[in-house]
Length: 256
Image (cartoon, rainbow, N blue to C red; front, side, top):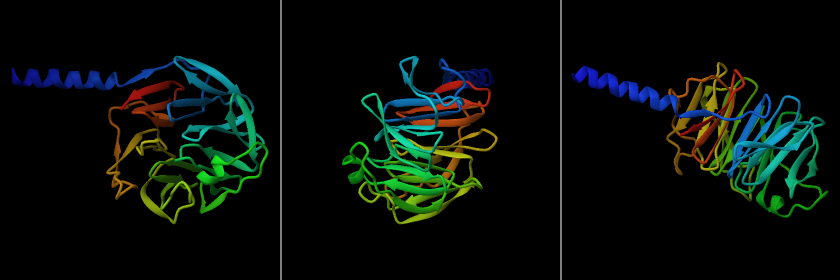
């Protein structure tokens, strides 16, 4: 009888894990997804950018290669490497020569230039931006392929899938002090606005960074999220929800 009870408990646990993620409607094949500050955006391989509104995807713009949503709003990079921010439904051109942008910082914006250099725009410069005005980007002193920022700092991944955490970041001084190497190789790392960090292995396995505190903002170790069996090619996290694009092109909303 005790063994049967254990088997029933295990069956319930498997069912609970299976219900953790639900598939949501897809506007088309998405290659990228991002979430922050209650916003969810996605990008098709064709360059069409969308924002999720309930169960519907609203078209934002075409000709884009990267889109980001966060505390600093919605930002995009087009196929000509210009970055834009969405203001009142209109795209405002900001700078040129970028390959990736991230709007998840605490009222600061970070990105990767076309030469792979990591840069950021401080909160003071961001809050005083005017249409068509020149902005000053601060150098973060590392070549990266991907950069993601949250309240506790920024995470970067280089071309060899090595992971780094930027120490000493503050909104008014977004460039921080130094990069600390974080053991483990991942194709992508994403940080949510609450500081939670998730990552994807080259094979699609999803990991969570544990041990993150105010005194240890980079956490202590990576733990595989065993309840998620889908293989991911992109992910984003916001408001206790992990968003996945799977390797078979499904979009999953996973309650964490």
